[in-house]
Amino acid sequence: MSSAPRDTFADYRARLDALGFKPSSVRGQNFLLDPTLHRVIADAAECGPRDLVLEVGVGLGFLTRELADRAGFVVGVEIDDRLHQVASEDLRDRSNVALVLADALGGEGGSLPESVRVVLREKAPKDGAFLVVGNLPYSASGPLLAELACFETLPDRIVVLVQKELGDRLAAKCGDDDYGGLSALLQTYYVVERLRSVGSEVFRPRPKVASAICRMRRRDSASSWSAAQRRAMQLFLRSLFGKRRKALSTTLTEAAAAIGARAPTVAEPMQKRRAESLSPEELVLLFRLTTATG
Image (cartoon, rainbow, N blue to C red; front, top):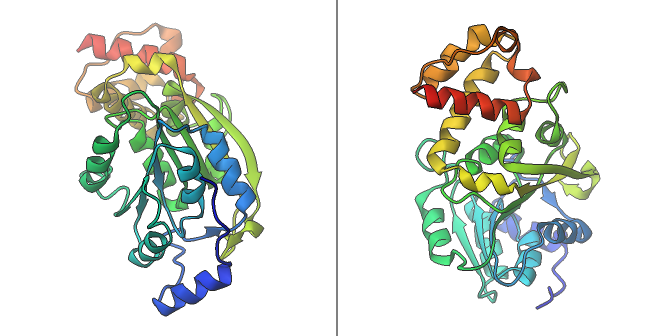
């Protein structure tokens, strides 16, 4: 099914005005209007008729339509009840779309809420991929991506539109100024690509910053990690990078304690290194050594 022409943004504004909606900068409610970019994002996800897509931040459902044309099923999450109402009305004829009114980080400890998990379990593909796609709210992008890295089912691919600064961090290499704990965490499980920059002129209202489209493809080695191990890795990295400029001789004991382990004995050259100088592969080895210590 190909997408029918959508109403103009002026029409949507009139409908939203009638509902008393005003875009919230806190919630990052900047609508991506360029249909070409909706297609670019959907195409980058490479979703097929057997795949399940989780879309975070449905907004007015522009990207949802493109995903529904390609995927087996789309589960969309929207936090704003007025946007949810408008998108639900427009997408009511799409039998392969379920929209959930929820905060994507509203579950226990900032996780995906149970209302979303229930639908994902119900629609889980038997022989397809699980993908996450979205124009993410800027304030929630980092925490959401960190949470997805610990989710019970690790997504096969993630394609997101995020603030350019975060996109630079996601793709940064060790030694880069932008390299941090989130970079290392996601690169442990994914090959991260920063596909293209997106200017503010294609949004309404216009954000004050540029954006970037990033794609993450799951590594084969990621299948060896259980959800519990990925959660422990997140805590380990958060502790190490909390004092990123201090040597491991100072930070490793605290990081080990964060996951209920004892700091391993490492050679003196390693003790002098800092978290920000370690590649994801080196950090994985350090984590494995730490968990083996018990």
